Image 1 (cartoon, rainbow, N blue to C red):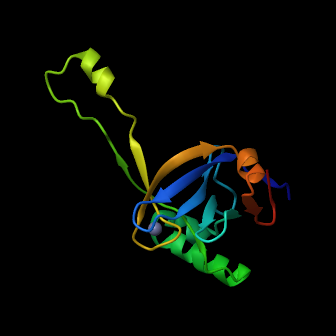
Image 2 (image 1 turned 135 degrees about the vertical axis):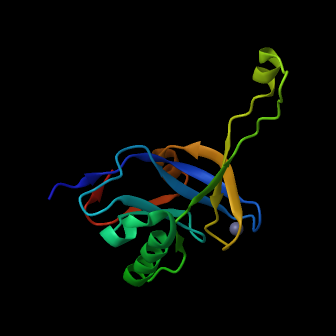
Amino acid sequence: MNPIVVTGSILRLRCQACGALFPHFQFSGERETEAGGLFSASSGKLDEVFIAEATEPEWKDFDRAGATLAEQRLAQQLGREDLRVIRLLRIESALTGGQGMSFADFKKSYRPPVMVYSCAGCGEGESKLVEEISVEEFQLAGGNVRLADGLVM
Ligand SMILES: [Zn+2]
């Protein structure tokens, strides 16, 4: 079987509730595979992300129960309780303008939408982007990307 090539970048996220700063792998390429799809999990303790292939039942409902199943499988297979699948909770639109605003004012006040993610450290916290870096930059800074069998970068 040919290895599956993984492409993407690292988002450094900070939780607003517990203050945890942790990495999240963001896929840029194809995520669907024959069995299911690719997903990433982040450690809330180490500067580490883990990338693996979801099984078919996990992938079917990955936004909800499937991600929890995948976390449980990683914990069992790797003996790691600290790996969490980071979910995109919502997108905050920072548009402050209202009706009657000129286009120039609109452009001045425009802020790009802010992605709000779950936290790798605590259960309920919400995290936001601190910076986006390449996988190489992440590794040079001491970060660790672990790939499941059959995956390459
Ligand atoms: Zn947190």
